[in-house]
Image (cartoon, rainbow, N blue to C red):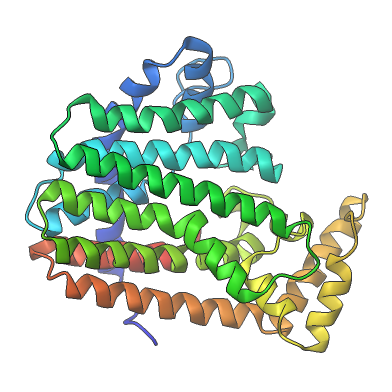
Length: 353
């Protein structure tokens, strides 16, 4: 399945939606982070890019704000307002950043958004606790100004999505201890680790915007397929992305022997390149010498491509994007919100960072 090419106009529409979401969400995020105990708040503020390692005001690169933008866009798509859906938008961004703080520790990543990760600055224990605090705060945000039964449903959905995310992360970690992982297993893990929260974001937006059950279900499925496509794009960037743009070291996923989707597709290909890749992936440690390590990463990337992992991931990302856009149309979104959500979807999958 193929989708229409992204236009410059659409890219501008998507960027505008992301910037608007960041502008709406950040003040509330700062307020909630400010309610945390000072040592925890300091770590979280650094992670969000608001302060430097000494706690001084900073303006470091922020995240994309895709999940809040989806919440706000889906609320508008069913006839509600972005402002009315600000509460769930803040909540999903807190859950997302909880996962990033934990991911960086679990994966040993030392760079995020062009600067040192929180755990490398404050220690893994402090970063872990900051992530825990953000997760707990997400439910507090939803319950702060309750509107029953919407609030009860929202807390349940977000809790379920966070649980699936954690399950997906645990499964992903278990893959590191196995010599063989199937594509079916990897796709199921991705649905939990990444797609569950994007799916929940869209459903929460519809719920707060007053969408019908049918609209909410279609938008939930829109987010699910978008989440799958998003992770495929992320995995491709993890191997072939430009470090000066992504803010992450080149080939970090390959160096750490991460079984990302393109890698699993290559390992499962039955090709000579896939067998050679499996042999190299079986080595416990990458070379210590920086030049030798860089050469090995280049070789691994070439083998993934030669075994068909890259082309499979690119085609699957487009297929999932097409499914997402079909679900979006089925939700009968109103007015400009439809164009914004479609633009966001294409931008998220065809991004360079």
